[in-house]
Length: 214
Image (spheres, rainbow, N blue to C red):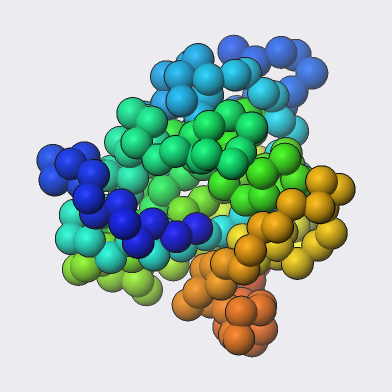
């Protein structure tokens, strides 16, 4: 997901549903829960979700200070509009930088981060990795891998259901909407597609998942 122009927002200056939906058993280690208010912005409508995928993004927002907290505040206050999606705002579940993780939506509620009304939004937990100036990418990648492994265990999500944003743009959508091309997360893609770098990253996630046990 691209946020090249988010630096203009002044925010940069300054992580109970129905019984039919999975209810989280706890909070991932090291996560600050700072949810978008229920009934507002990306949670304007209650849309339950049973997560079966995890979608990994990169913000492409390089402004100084545009870390996990800043992005969490932007979606918490409705600063990022989604003019072409069903709810009018962008929203995802977790934002990760090199020292923190913020949760902005419950993992059993649908976000707007992948493919409008497609299966990416309907079935996946969205994780955004920060790229702000001064952020340590290696640490951000590692924290994201650990978070992903925890979510895999919590929701019994297999490794082949951990996908890059680009995954959802390569499949046919029933509404025939043009989703464009998002090379996301760009630093893990090769020529706009998952390749060796993505497979190596999945290997790291798999190692963390094994370390968590059954």
